[in-house]
Image 1 (spheres, rainbow, N blue to C red):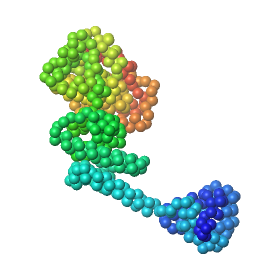
Image 2 (image 1 turned 180 degrees about the horizontal axis):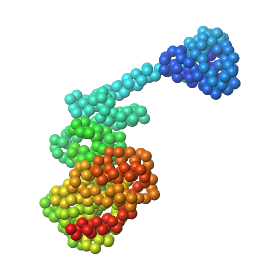
Image 3 (image 1 turned 60 degrees about the vertical axis):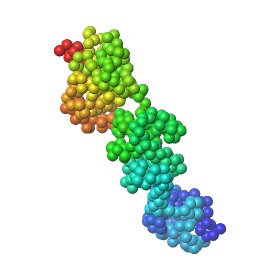
Image 4 (image 1 turned 135 degrees about the horizontal axis):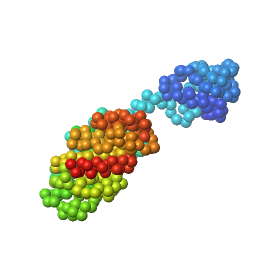
Length: 436
């Protein structure tokens, strides 16, 4: 055992030096040498005696401050001298002492090597001018286009992330081929064919996120901010997502599919019954025909059921979105407006409900009527449920004049308003508007 190892062994055997050496390591990582002031608060008598023994002084105060260099100098006067402090630290901690700067440089070198390996693989699969190779290159140099997702996974498991990125790359190369044939692939079939796992590219998975980042890079479009945009991005690349889970409930609405009025929806209209329509049902939609020139949309299923049950005359068109607008509802709205109808939208008066209504108004203008969501309606619909500060931030960008005033009151009261508390008002409105 050399002097440095013997010195480190001595300090390891004496717990009074433990905090001291933790501070030495921090200084070394920052500067790569013996420098700086070491500060220890609330020291014990054992710590002060041990440190003072090396410094050659008696320490009385609970808070101990001394130059790192002074400790190293004192160590050179002990039986372990001469010692190399860097080697003492390495023996003490059992690892190489690397400065933060050097550690970052090595980390960046590792990342560059990682991207180079994946890039080489994808170049062999396609060619150096391929969009997928360009995507990978710009991802690394610009730290965009999915870079954060890759680095997050890289930090967990480099080997698995290499496999992940290569698989996503193969998927994007395959997409270039199917774009030319204009074939469509169900998402599950596409995922299974590329990876062997039908859920590999599902929304929310790392692979799914990177696939869409690559699609957006190729199309020079922004990354989707909601499920509808995600669906549209997949569809534009010939990938058909799950169309069954996206549902909207309708009443009093005829649907034209491939140019023909669908007999099933005509029958629901005749029988004055509601039905659920999925995105799958709307794939070949060509037109709609509401009952009258007004369409009412509510957010809540119970409100939908109540209104249908209590309307004296049911010659109306009513839709229920069940919260956030799903793709089926988003698909229907332009067709409803094309039919000449005005839309009356009413949702819960909370940050999410206000934002849904505001987005509709911003997208379609005054043909979307904000219905029973005013400041006065908020007072009537008020509940005891408090709104958290994170949700409250959603109200900062509201643009619709009516909703902006309502949002101001919501920020004051910090409580949610619910449609269930203004059912009779909604019902009276539908009766009066319907009869005009």
